[in-house]
Image (tube, rainbow, N blue to C red):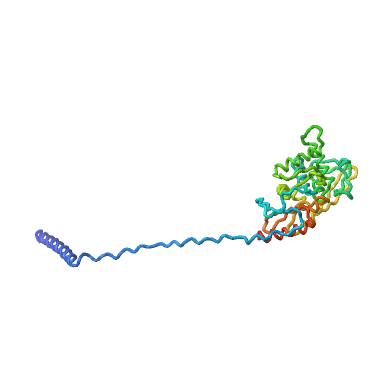
Length: 317
C-alpha cells in the first residue's frame, strides 16, 4: 500500500511539471502572454478661476454750481474730501465759529456745572442773536450749550467763555475770555485747522478772525464725536429752565432750517454782513453713511447744501 501511495504522488508531480513546460512552450510560440490592458490615467481638469468683476462707480459728476464763495464736502467715516471749492481760503466764519466754542467748552468744563450770568454777558436780542439771558440767571454749562447751538446765542457764547476761561491757565492779566479764546486756537491747531484764527467766541465780524471751509469741516468732524453736542444740534426746539431772581423757562428754536430734511441732523448756521450766509451741515443717508457740507459766503446756504446733497447722491450712489 505504501508503495502505491508513493507512486501516485510521483505521478502527480510529473504531470504538474509537464503542464508548466507545455505552458512555457505555448507562450514562447505565441510571443508571450497577452499584454494587460493599458492603465487609464484620470485627468482632473481644474477650471480657470473666473474673475469677479470689480464694481466701478460711474463717472464723477461735474462740480455743482453754487452761490457760496467756498464749499467743501467730506465723508465722515474716513475723512475723505469729495469736493472742495476755494476750500482753503480763510473767510469770515460768522456763528459757525461756535462749533469750536462748543468743543472748547466741553473739553474744559463739566456739562452739569452751574453758571451765574454777569451783566456784561447780556445782549440786546434786537441787535444780536441771543438765548435771552439776564444778569443773575443761573443755568448749567449744558443749557448754555443749548442756547449757543440752537438760537445761536451770543450771550451764551460770552457766558461760556467767561465761566470756562476763568478755570484755565493763561498769561498774567489775561481775561477769562482771552484765555478761552487761546484755548479755542490751541484746539484748532490740534485738529489741523491751519487756515483759522478765532478772536471771539461768538463769531462777530472782527478783523483777522477767519476760518476756511476745510478747517470748519475738521472742527465739525470732531463735533460729531461728541454725543452731547450731536444731541443738542439735532434738536429743533428746546425748553431751558433758568434759575435766579427771574426764574423762568426759555423756549429756544434751532436756526438750522434744514433739520430733518434729506437726513440733515446738524450742525450750525452763521450770518453776518461780512460773512454772508454760512452753514455747516451734517446728514445721514438711508444706509447709514454720514457726510458734512460746509458753505461760506453763500447767497442761499440752504439751496447750496441741497445741491451738494444731490451731488453726493449722484456720486456715491
